[in-house]
Image 1 (spheres, rainbow, N blue to C red):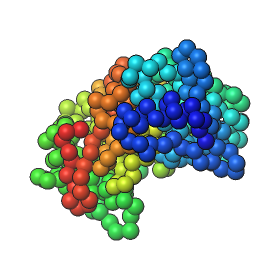
Image 2: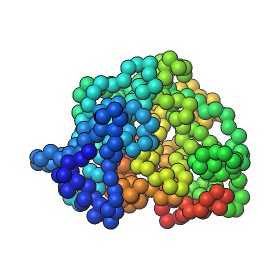
Image 3: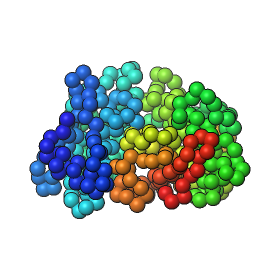
Length: 342
């Protein structure tokens, strides 16, 4: 639920900025627990998300776990007009127990919250309540490591019976000639040698990849498509969404992957000993990471490359030599065209 003041002072002005009157924030819940969106007076005023911790223990692409990203985007749009809003995430209830599926998703949400509060410390704050975080640097020390890629056939043809994103992913990496997506991308944006599937971003502790040391979802936690520039200075990462899938959770997911891989590239996360053939070696060697939000359209709160949200993220990420960029396309497999004006 949200208060009348939140609707009047936060939602309505952003809707007017975007000329999108139907923009909403996540309001559903589970077992009688739901987020509460409110405004607290002050100088400056505060927009507050009061949310049960258990709602952040699901897939971060979904609306409820992405609620902190909604709050951040609303604050950035409001602040772009000169209104100095503060944003507060107020957690309600304890973190899940160790050894549960929920703790893996909670650890990922916790990393995101810590990252938002660190990058946007001037106006974004988390009140942890009964779910205190680790010290942020410790999350990337003491033997933290990523899992390695599973071998994939980089030329797998699009198949039947797959989810839309799987079909798009397979099509994205198929072919290198004129008209292929690789050729289209290089014509406008980069000089990528080839595109590959599934760069893993599952986080483990104690320097060992196992069920016992797993910190975040592992097997299905991966960048969809990625490729390395010819000079090996840049790694291009692609988070793909098919037609109609424009949830704001795409931003949370993409930023999380970029944040983790940036810390890996800087040596805060292992494995530290990598052979040249291992996919993560290319990330460690690169000088620049670019993650492309690839979809037919993005959620209105994300906006475009010149909007306040992506500009703020990229300004905050500048010291890590990482960036988020939109990459729109039209059509459906097998007739997909990348748009150069993103």
